[in-house]
Length: 342
Image 1: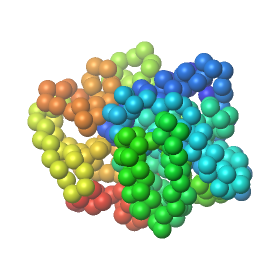
Image 2: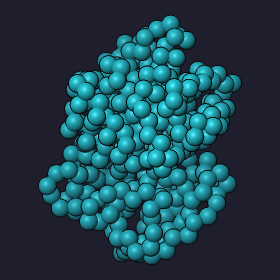
Image 3: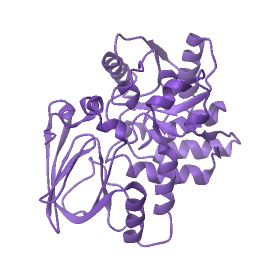
Image 4: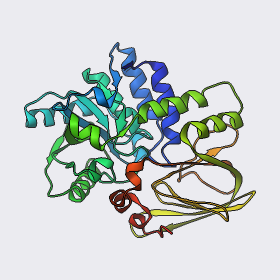
């Protein structure tokens, strides 16, 4: 059990952006919310998945919508309380713990903000181990956990309850409601027991983000930091300069292609996240993590920010083994994004 502190929040924020694979939104807003809540003398703890009782109620919390809108349409901090209470009333049971839907990007800290405001512990696990653009792209979905009942709230206090026939419809309805709420909302979904969570979640994701963040915040050279991150994550790294970026519309998402010149000419395909990295000696593709970082600061470069002239490191990190199964690849493999898995 780890007590959430300002240092914990800052470390998670740094590491979670690395795990976002170029997506998931910058952690800046959720980090500020968590730090402000800590200043109000509120506390919560990060707990191990195996410590949750099998029959306990575990709920997921996330922000949904455009991270860019979030910078102008700030949440008030009570949205998580609204959605959790709505589902608690439905089940007639209190939430034992909150598990993040997405342990990367801004949603890595959303569950912590909710846990701080409500005094509920946060599980050191999540449903992705990285960032994905849709709610059904989770290991919870792979293991048959229903996305609904789902509660959605905006910053004004409006709440909506959703019950769908499957997880794809749940994502579709939630996306539509979020647009009506101004492009951004808070949701609670994937209600599960402790036993189901232990089986379906990607474990130790927030502590992994903390370890990566600790490396990034250390007083060593960027090269040394990347070497340590690769040792921790079993990843690889290459260096190059972005020569060309072409943006286009894919089947379901906008994205593009980038060419990076280093020891080899490397092609990157991206949509909401970086999905494919290929050159003569290596090919890495989703669901594995591909992250581009600035060579001087190691700040992750999002898919919206990539442009010619940037000097970058290309960091690749293997995804959790749950994503390497047949069902996992059906849910979030290359073909899901209209790409050839090779």
